[in-house]
Length: 630
Picture 1 (cartoon, one colour):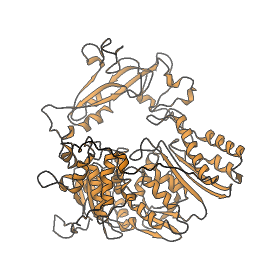
Picture 2: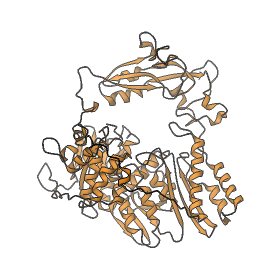
Picture 3: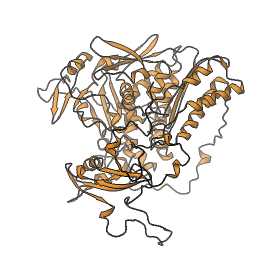
Picture 4: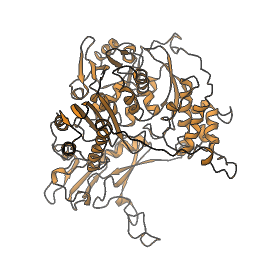
């Protein structure tokens, strides 16, 4: 499994009670990211629980299998569980609008199989509501226990006041547990050993509609979308239709079912390079985030200001989203695929415009650099400008391009590409809203029968049913063999430098680590190619033995008894690089101050080596001197 909510192999259907509405909600979730002790009171159905060859297959499993939708089969359980959860949550009736965003992969056979349930909805019997019982006294669980599991401590408060009572008694790093979906993007720090489950706190999941829309911090992205759809016809809230459309592009269905508004914004606060869509949209519309620092102390911040507050123990209570009268809002997200991917660049724009004269402009981008939010110079330039004049339009984009200071932090896309993508989506907004040009798209619609050419009856793949029921065997399902070990690459980080020393001492002292191998341990030639064989013309190194040729080039492997131990130990290997022996072609023509590497580096004199430990003491940050984030 991927352990980052990507493949869908571990998907389950969860039924849980919403503490605000007191109604049961059903949705799919990634078990690889859902912490076990946060599942108190959940009713969980696995892919095996839906059906198998012994008990018989579920209609959804059969439909996907018999329409050749299983493909390789690895993500087929995700398709089935997603649709099962969607049908269960909607009394067996699913619209095309609901199912079109559920598929992780845009494969036509998957779409055909799932679409059939929107056209011919089946009845799914509701499972009886079960109240969880306490294993200690058999009474109804009140979720207020404290549990210590080895080194970890768990708490289940029922009110915000109880959270602050817990804060008064803990000194260690802690985590407020909502959906834990952030762990799929950025691994949780290993020093966190105190977990506070906040999924049963009513105040954090309530919402209120008035002059503004107030959303509790622990409302899931899925429920936020439902709320946006329910208010989008109210005067001043029409823009929520666009917000809901954008939310449906975040991650995937299981992640949205578990991930929360506050959790998404907190991830942005902890990792400024994270292109958070929630942060971007809320900042653009002028939303306020209301934060509790004590039982009675509450402060409101803009989303951007919240990123830089200095506090350790606090609770995001809710978000206040204003009404927008006669303002033009839209947002865009450019990714490698339609879902389950971070944006190369995302943008949101809000204009107060009178005909073609702009009274005020809000222009926000994500994915430019960690501290970039507003295109301030362009916003200021556009005030009281008539955008219909060509020279104004040209000056606008010159101004925007000049302030888009995109960084280069692998594996992000090229900075020049990201700058022009940002200009492109801004032009799209200008084109659609400010110039009021109507786009007419003609689609050639062919009848369903004319698209089909049936020669013979379709051949059903023999393994389709076992793939759709989770019974198929993959590498992860194979039992461990005697003396089996797992390998994790140790990778080079400085392109063009020469490897002087590789020191695995600290890594080899880690528990369950067996060995470390590098180029010197390879018998014979350090190459996995043989020149002269078929079309091969030169040797290709297995491990770096001299100059680093490309970023993340393997320089060795750690062997360990578990995968997690191998990955952890690989990060402990110390590498000493020399000065650059060659200038990478990708950097030719760049000024020295613009060199951007994912690891820290320092210009050194000839024949002097610098270790990564020394580099950590410099102020070069991500390859350039740090700027004032404001």
